[in-house]
Image (cartoon, rainbow, N blue to C red; front, top):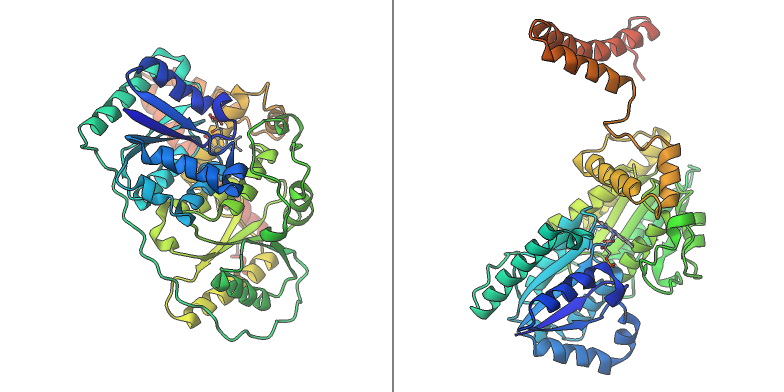
Length: 467
Ligand SMILES: Cc1cc2nc3c(=O)[nH]c(=O)nc-3n(C[C@H](O)[C@H](O)[C@H](O)COP(=O)(O)O)c2cc1C
C-alpha cells in the first residue's frame, strides 16, 4: 500500500516525529511510505502553485494518509495549519475526500488531546475517514513498549485500510453561516482610565464582522486601547523549534515580533485576542503569533493580566477551541473577562455582549482579582514543571526561573508539610495510634482554615467588613 505522510514538523526529517515514521518504514517494508515535508516547505508551497499541485497529486495516489506532527502550543505548528488552509482554499480537499487517515503526534503530552481533536475534526471536514491517532511522548520510541505500541497501532491501521472498514472517529460537521454584524457605531466614550488595553487583531479585509466588533468594543471601553494588527506585523515565519531561545529567551528570527511583544503586549493590563475562526481554530497567521510565544519557554508572564476574546465564527460548535482558550487563560495566570462571538442572529445582542466585555474591563482594572485555576491550569503547570526539570540542561532559562521562583513544588520536596506527613504516615502504621492520628489529620486541616476566620475577624474588630 502507498501511505502518504504529511509531516507537520518544521524540523522536517530531522525532527522527532519523523523518526516514528522512519521506524515504521523500516519495520513494514511491504508498504511504501512517502513523506511530504509540508511544514518545512510551507513558504515554497504557498508561493509556487506547481509545488502545491505535486503534493496534491501524491495525496490523490495515496491508499491512506498519516498526519505526522509535533504538538505546538496545544495544537499543530502554524506551518501545518497554513497547509490545511491551502487545502481548503485551493480545492486540494478533493484529493483527500474518501481516504482513510490517521495521525501520529509527538509531544510532551501537554494538551496533546486538543491537537488530536483538531486534526480529527479537520480530517472529517476534508471528508476523510479518520481513525483514532497515536499520541507518543517524544522519547517513547526509545523504549521496547513504545516501539511495540507504535507497530501495533500501525498494523491495526493498515488492516483497517486494506479491509476498507475504518473505525471512524466521528466529528459532527460545522454548520455556520455568519450573520452580518453592522450596527450603527456609538460615539467613543471618554478615556477616563489609565490602564493599558491591547487588542491583538487578526482582522483581514474579509473579516468585516470582526473589524466592526473590535470597533464597537474600542469605542465603549474607557481605557486607552492599543490595536495591534497582525496583518501589519512583520513575522518572517513560524517557530522552527530550533530551541535556541531555550538558553536566554532570544529568538533566532530578526523580525518585529519580539520587540512588539515586549513593548506592547507584555506591559498591558488587559489583552483582548480578536480573531476569526478558520477551519477549527484561528488563522495560521494568528497561530504563528501564538507559536512564537515559545521564546518565553514555559515561564508564566511576570505581569498578570486580564484576557478577553472577540471571535467571529462558530465557537459554540468548537468545544476543543473553547478548551484551548480556557487553558491559555489559566496557564498565563490571567483573569477571564469574557468571550464575545458573532453567533447570535440579533445584532443588538452582540452589541450588548461587546458593551458587557468593555464594562468587565473597566470593572477589573478598578478592582483586579484572579480566579484560582482549575485542572486545566493546575495539571498543565505540573506537566510543565516536570518537563522543565527533566530537561533542565536544555531548558536552562526555564530552569533558572522555576528554581528562583519556587515553581519546583514537587510533593517530594522536604518542606514542613513533607516532614509532617512522614510523621503522620509512621503514626498510621502503629495500630494503637491510628484512630487518633486520623482525627488529628482531619482536625489539622480544618484548624488551618478556621484560623483564617479568627485572624480576619480580629482584624475587622469582629464585625463584617463591607466595601
Ligand atoms: C514551539 C513549540 C511548541 C510546543 N508546544 C508543545 C505543546 O503544546 N505540548 C507538548 O506536549 N509539547 C509541545 N512542544 C514539544 C514538541 O511537541 C515535541 O518536542 C515534539 O516531539 C517535537 O517534534 P519534532 O522534532 O518532530 O518537531 C512544543 C515544542 C515547540 C518547539
